[in-house]
Image 1 (cartoon, rainbow, N blue to C red):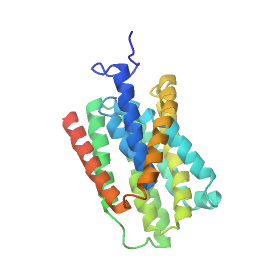
Image 2: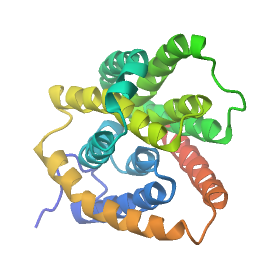
Image 3: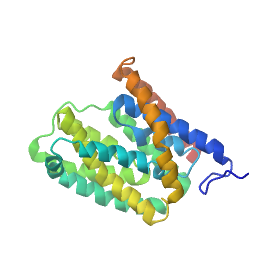
Image 4: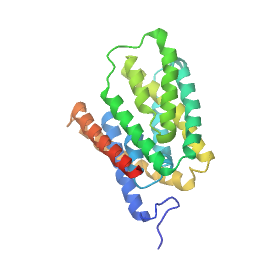
Length: 257
């Protein structure tokens, strides 16, 4: 019986691909459960080993939108967060639409290199911790620049987070304001990303079904990750994650060249 899927790579039978995808979402769920972020950061480069990058991005549609919608609804003063970050969100929205259109015209090998570059950029930004706070008078213009950069990265890899997280950390936001703000901002990157992929025929019924199924292994991974919080310090886990992501980036670069 042929178990291949419409977007399966020729050398990977369908059942093996599904097993690898399940393992990927478990690993990504562990990272998100431990750190609270990092689902696309881990899942996209791993899935890009066996799938076209844009297909890998499409498979995250249900877990990413569901988690961020849930956090945005529970956010403290969502209207205030939306008003504060309207410039960033608008720039992110526009930049994402433009970069997705450009990504659709690029060959798979180059997209793999761009995904690898996004992972390297994410690792650098995770290591960098801003010491000084952003003054209020610079927040608006800097937010627009961050939105443009995050959208450009998100359109080719779905990784809008690194630039936005670094920016919000420099604003010295309280924990609840940080979570609510980043969830609302993420939606302005993820909704145009997935809508564009659907419009251009890269996100269809098979991807949506598999993405919905991916909620199960992701939930298992998040459960494991929450338990790891008490066993492993955030700093130690972050170091492991940085090493893991650096290895993924090198492998993707080797695959693309």
